[in-house]
Image (cartoon, rainbow, N blue to C red; front, side):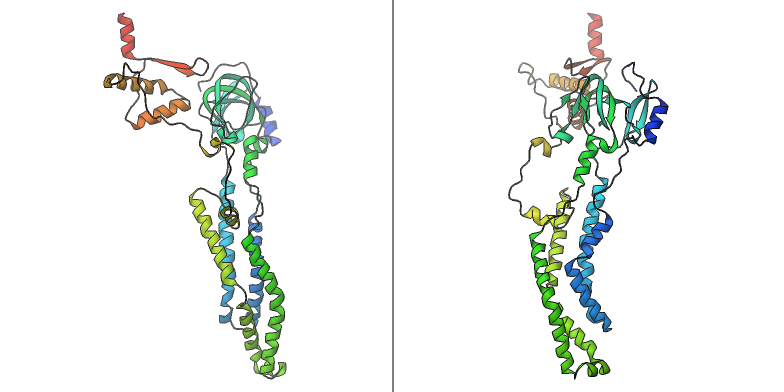
Length: 401
């Protein structure tokens, strides 16, 4: 590791073990606020399922299995909700702002690479260009460190960090290097707090389901006495309860009563609503939009205007190389333009280029440019705002002069 020389020794091995035993590590438990049991319970124990299940049980008591086929509506309706919400839960479980990687820390006076989860509170952490900050820390020594905090704040402009400044997990170093002392790890870090907020579950109020449930509640009060009345009328038709029980006609009477009642329940409306929500959730998923609960699709459909606080919130904060504009006195000379473009590529081709340098390398690389011979190099620094290279041709001219 090519890192500056510092006097700080960092934590000792015994101090690191003490932090690990007390749970002061950067490991974060990946959980959501909604368990599998909660998802199953919310989709199974509904008023609609209760009515259909009670009707199905009555039909099954009579032994008429074929007439109980309508109960499959429960499985279809419940299955749609459970499968969709379990997929959302699985996505949320994997949600994390931080990228798992190895980082350089200083312990016992030596620099060593450790996984991000093994960083402990009080560690001396090296923040290098191109790396994501794994834990909150305070800068002790900055060597031109610049951070991209767009993931946290939505602001795409880089931020220069000096000695004593606070850096937050989730930001990315675009140039320079710094030595910082970790002061928040794991669930207490800024990135973990943001991730936890994204995983919070809030019950969505659906006007459509609310209306359907109102109808079902009304039907519940109507269905019970109506079912009793239908059974009683059927029994009178066959000569009363004793005759119905003796002849077995009571079975057909119950099946007929249930058939009359089930026909009044809007099964198709409930099933069609769930299917529409599920299809909308799948279409939103193709556009990288996560639907935690099916009813939230209706809420999104009612949105007239979506207000966002910053442009950086909906962009990636990156830059792209477009073109190289030559000075007027050099414009039109293809050889000069080609040499200048190659020089720009070689200037950007550092060991750890910043965001601008990486954009130049990617853009010119797609146009067929490759690294040329470089004899010496002065890396780019945000403090002096320039970089330089010495090519074999330039060195030969200097030696001959």
